[in-house]
Image 1 (tube, rainbow, N blue to C red):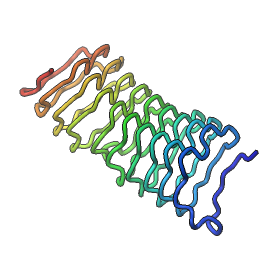
Image 2: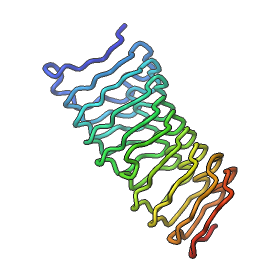
Image 3: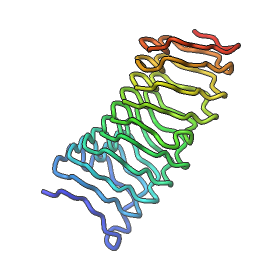
Length: 220
């Protein structure tokens, strides 16, 4: 059995990728330090390795693929390197992560990237220009600052979160189905006039009491 996975730079200078499912469901590993040469963590690489409580992501890492770090319920925090430019679907879904800082290099995230995780806050979320469907659904997320370049809030993006106040971007064109459904603490919202469509159930079962639709907004 081994508890810690440590890549030493003088031995592992050729390691650029951790392949699919290499440590999936491994219950022995508790901490991981990745090599400085690593570029990619492939799909399900550490998925459901449920005793991992610490992962050090290297500067230089570019891609975290689908469900690579999902189901890590004991992993409470993570530092995303400034070189990261791809975060795939479900990458941190079901993890225990409570807070994350979005690097400038990361402009989009995949479907369900943080869904059903412990995420309560996001720093520098305004760096994100595109969100995946259900990206934050089922989290206790309390705040989110939109980039002014976000034009679409996809299906279920913030469903069942703890958002209480939110300022929608002025460039927003579409709020898709169930985007803010079951947001039981969101009481007030202004829809900017740039919004052309609001999808079905976008705010169903929310706590909205004050909704202001600026001239030009319309629902489907």
